[in-house]
Each structure stands twice: as structure tokens, then as C-alpha cells.
Picture 1: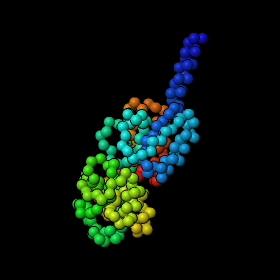
Picture 2: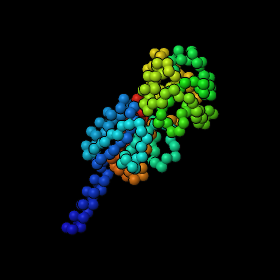
Picture 3: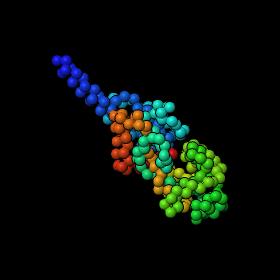
Picture 4: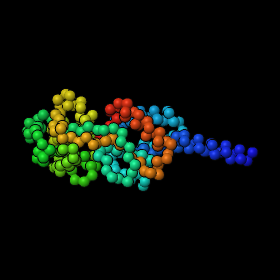
Length: 232
């Protein structure tokens, strides 16, 4: 009877360890609130009623270990940070401005032409302000002069629509204005192809059943064509 009780307890612990449960702290960018991300979290909670989720929404770069974050959804080129990274979706960037802005300043034909332009920059991009181009399949980060730095792309798009300067943002955010002719994209052949929406987490969180289940759902939804699940 004692051995049967030990084996039964061991089986119960194994089953509990493989079933998603517990608290999961998820960090994401402000722009995710405007996408399918909230409904995806709702779907996840419906599928796994034993999981409690704490969304941490903000554009500040955080240390996952220090702040107790299980998984962070990030956007950009993937560096050599000491984290496990799962690519979720490739993100297309567009560099655009109003027709009147290009009329006043001239339409660029090469990345270096942007040195003489006013550019609205994303202030949380690491290092000095730059535009992420690609020449001959190699990254080419062009230092730029920025008339505005903001930590949210929607603010930059609004300034671009006012004719203040050019902006480089995920295509999804600019597409409605491009279709209406309010913004005109340039240098599309030089836009990078290595920009990703990706999930980052630490090795010590790797064995969490809840984390694995969330990663699986994210990958399935991204592959399924959730094209508006992009950050800003």
C-alpha cells in the first residue's frame, strides 16, 4: 500500500507539471493592445483555466530576470542577448512621409540621401538615432538627424501626417494612410528583411508548461495569418 501511494503521488505530480498552470507574467509593447494580442490572451485563458496571466504593457526595455517576467514580446533585429528567442512573425517596415514633405525636400533614391532629411525616430531603439536599411543583403544602419523622438510609433505617424518629417514604422501602421495617399513610401528596395516580432525568455523559465503552451499558441496564430498581431 505504501508503494502504491508513492507511485500515485508521483503520477499526480507528473501530470500537474505537464499541465499548464500557475502565474505567467507577459511583457509586451504598447502597440500590441491595438492588435489581436488581447483576444489571443483571452483565448489562452479559456484553453487553460489553471493559468493566471499578468500582462506588463510598456515600451521600456526591461531585464526579464530582475523584474520576474516569464516572456517578453519584442520587435526588431534579434541580437546576441543572453536569452532564448523564438521568432514569431517577420515584420515589414516602410519609410514614408507626406507628398508635401517629399515635394519640399526631394524624394530619396539611396539610403544616404536620408542624411539631409528630418526623420521622426523611435527613442527606445538602442544607440544613436538611425534608420535600419539593408544593402546587398547586409544591414546598413544610417545615422540620422531626428526632429522628434517618441517611445510610441502612433505618435510618430501623427507627426509624419502633419508634415514634420519622415517616419519608419511597421507597414501595418502606415498602410491605411499609404492607400489614401496621405503618406508616400520610399526606398522600399532597401528596407530590411530581418525585422521580427519575437518572444524572448530565460533558460530558467524554459520548462514552464504554461510558457510552452503560450508559445505554441502564438506560433500557431502567427502562422495562421494573424497579420495584425504586430507591435508599434
